[in-house]
Length: 336
Length: 281
Image 1 (cartoon, rainbow over the protein chains, first blue to last red):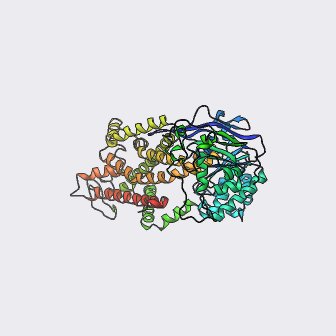
Image 2 (cartoon, helix red, strand yellow):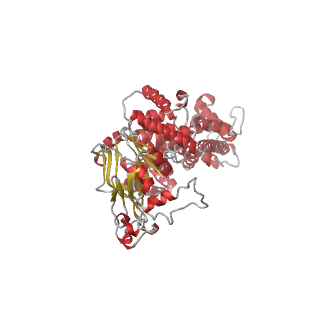
Image 3 (spheres, one colour):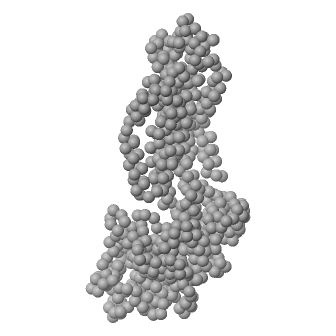
């Protein structure tokens, strides 16, 4: 990937100040807390973070799929080509789901209905948006299956999910998501449940389809290797917030946030002998009880007084590179 | 192979269940053909000399205190038992499934209202409720028995369905269908109902035996379907006073009752094992 900042494109998706709260017995969990992110037309953007940092909830919130006891807080804004998705009526948002923005899930087995043939599940996605006959939809479903590289598509369309392998199922999910040619695909850990060779195959396929359909992809993952290979820009999420935003190459070369550094340091490398994996000390705090000040400070090796009391905003590091860390302002505080 | 066909195959391999189901079919046939197989169950050919006669060629199961043919009455009694049992179970399950769907899909408030209502209803003794109604409504037709038994018997099903709906709502394939813009009625029809169907079918089939017993209990007490229409309950009642001198009068409907309930329960157990392999013992 070239280090040049991604060419400015018209934002396809623009999320501003997105907050999702869950009311539970332990109080209010602020699972997503003031997230800003944009995805340009045709762009591939990564959203990285540990489990529980709010990445998946962010994706669900974009399509307004957050169910009670969760709700999207007042003041959040999600715009698709300028249209405020949070202000749409139930019918209008339904017309967006799958048609303009589609979502693929992590576990292809549980995301498919076990008692329906896969072809009919793809046909269902088509018929949700287009007034086509049952047989046309079925025929298009078979076409989609062929398009995602499933051999003998006609016969496979009649299969039940349990009769397909994990990789095949993930292809079926992609076929469902892409059946209506969405402009944006939210891919929530699309390969995590698959083994490594199949992972690569699916990502290749995703790439090819993306180029063919010209759609944008928000790739949600905890796997930095995938981010490095497949994205131009990346958002790093921690404790419900974006903590760093930068062109992908830049993140790998000069990460500014200690959390991002920690994630990168945790990747084992071939050229380096290491007996233990380097982990970030501590755990993600519960979403009902974020620490005051910078949310990463209890786990941060550089933290000082300011970090414990004042929450840093996203501070500009370079063009297209921002980090939520006081070190940007006071680099001399960095401990070696 | 479709999951339903797999279930059918599992059922077919379950011997006791198949025998139970076969017995149910035989009973249903006998009940259906009763008017052609036997004499008029109401006829009293000779109320003086044919009282409490033991089994003979003319009356294979003997006669009752009113000189009526016990075999004919037992077969005709099966009609009431089967119609009330299956009818009320179907109706109860439909009601319960409907209420459970509403509770599971509507908002918190509707859900709470319905489920607290169900809690209260389940705290009332069913038999007393039915006794009270039929004591007042003396000439209730069989349809009324069906409706009232169903109206007091859907609570458990509604809970099962509600629980299933609540967990299915969170199921990834339901969220995935919503994420692709599938309309809500379509999601209920294609993604919720088929998964709720299995526990509902099991619940209904297990209910049939209980309802048949309940109906027999009511008619033993002289409520519900009234004499002279033969029901197993009122036949046992007729036989009660002659239990020592003419045991066949009560024994025939009593045995029929036991066999029927066992047959239904065997079939129901088989259905449960076939539809939910995880629950199979």
